[in-house]
Image (tube, rainbow, N blue to C red; front, top):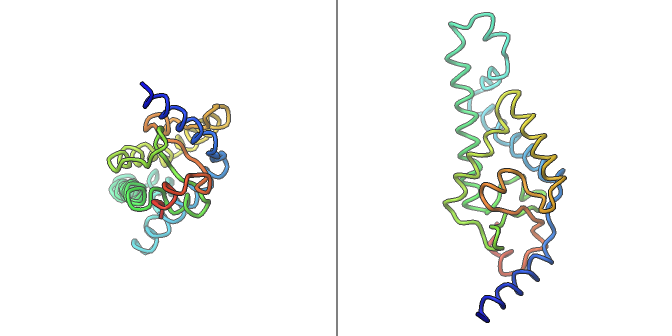
Length: 177
């Protein structure tokens, strides 16, 4: 019984010292990540990945361009999923989050388990959906701004909190890369 009370007191004081990440830093981190992913894809495909956004070519000649359109979007989704999954596993955050000093921790204040990064990476793909993704992103930003815990739907699904890395205790901060 006393162990649970002590754990509760420690976790409450731990959470009091955390600084929750503000919405614009989270949005900017995602934009930086998207720029990085698309930049790598532009280099790897010699610029052909840009055909994914040229809908008029698809409308003018769908029989010849549908395959390349779908291949490009598959590459974008696959590269994004792999990037968010493995950057999370290796650094406990993405490069954009690292640049803006953000950290993702589990709801109980510990580092996020490795198997949860797949789910979090998959949920982030919704922001990449053509046209719809922008609206989903805006709705999530509104949810972050209005919520007391400043959590998006992805945070709710994966039981995570996005905080400023400098507000973490030193024993957790040393695990970040």
